[in-house]
Image (cartoon, rainbow, N blue to C red; front, side):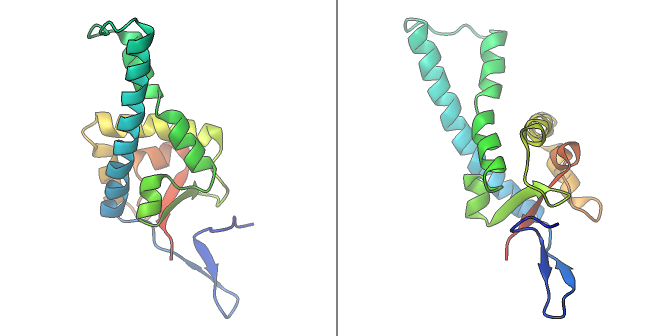
Length: 153
C-alpha cells in the first residue's frame, strides 16, 4: 500500500505513474538551507555549553564537545523526516523524503540517513554526487537508509 503523498499517483485509467526524483540542484539547495538551521542549533548548543562551563572557552580538540556538536542537529532532522518527510529546506523546494517502499521514515531510517549524510559531507559532498549516477538518483545517505527524495507536484 502506498503512503499518503507517495511519489506514485493514480492516473484516470487506474494505472500508476512515477513522479520524478528530486534533482541534485534542488537537493543541494535544500541541504544548504537546512545547514543554516543546523548551524543555528549548533550555535545554541555552544552557548549552553559555554554557560554551563562558567563562561570558559571550550578547548579545541575536545572530542566529547565535537561529537556533541555533530549530534545536536539530529533531533531536528529526525523529527522533520519522521513527521511529514520534510525539513524546512525541503519545504522551501517542495521536496519530500520517504522510504523506498513508500512508508514513512522510522527512527532507524533517520539515524542511518543522518550518519550517511555526515559521511557524504565529510567526503567533500561526494555522497551527493551519486544523485547523478544510476536511474534511481539516490545519494549515499539515501542508499544507506533505503530512503528517497522526490519533488512534489
